[in-house]
Image (cartoon, rainbow, N blue to C red; front, side):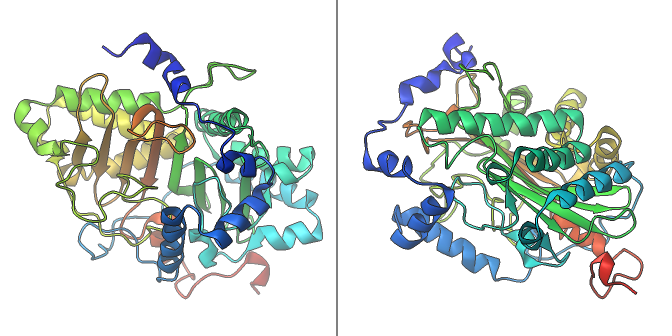
Length: 428
């Protein structure tokens, strides 16, 4: 069994960094914009700067969507009434807009077809500075921005988002750099005009929390999203006891451990988290084992592992529980509609695993079908000093493949919208 120290989260404290080294003494003097500018101009560290340049190149590619073989499969998604509280969401968005200055409005408002949908990222440095940043606006405006998030997400999804933000603030305090990382160091940008009848959406992004939300009438696509934590538990201060991502971890491990030996063998595509058998590019410093992170909108991700349809009923229930946890940001009715869509593809849903699967092992897993991809990964330290992946640093994400991200697959289905979109205010 895992030790009490691991369960408590205290294990991370033996990996606290030396704050006297130049990395931190420099960071402690900078705000978010100075920090990002220095990173972009200095190229330090070189591997991360190289990744940033690679990301920008990928951003120039026309959107296609993640696929398993390079071909986008048509007719996977449909318009439907998911029961989204669109009136309340629009009201919250308009309340926010009413509080913004003219300058802020120009920063926050983008066309529904803007490529900036795709320029979100999850590191702490501000690679794409657009919209408003919550730690730079007054408290009333910040509260209005959070009210939009609360109106859109399920209560439990909103609580999870707030927890991720608070953990980010906790990390900022641990490394004495709250101007770069704090509870409100997140950007919000709108795409299109808030409407109950026309498509629009928003992006909310920053360190370890990125949510892309497309809305059309009573339907929502929250994808891609990224949620992470380092450490994943706050063990001191006013938010002590806050913890996220333990359900995704526990359920994934239970599923892998419940498989018979033959299925475990097929599911475990690599035995080591950084396995010599991995092809070039399968691991990198930032994403580590993740395949579908920021700027990877068009990646080809082949199926790997074992089919869910081959599993026994209790294991299929674990799969459902994992997926419901990954769909937590959606309100309950929309979540169940999405689950129904996903279950239709259990005959083509694959589960794969990297690493060991003992109680104390760090690991990676992925569930993938034509209509959803979720990934879970234990990471080595970025601010903490653990060189090997540990259970207190977790990255998770969700993608909708075959053009589903950002609601793209739905757009061609919206009557009269086949030739692209205009802001509602631009329509005759």
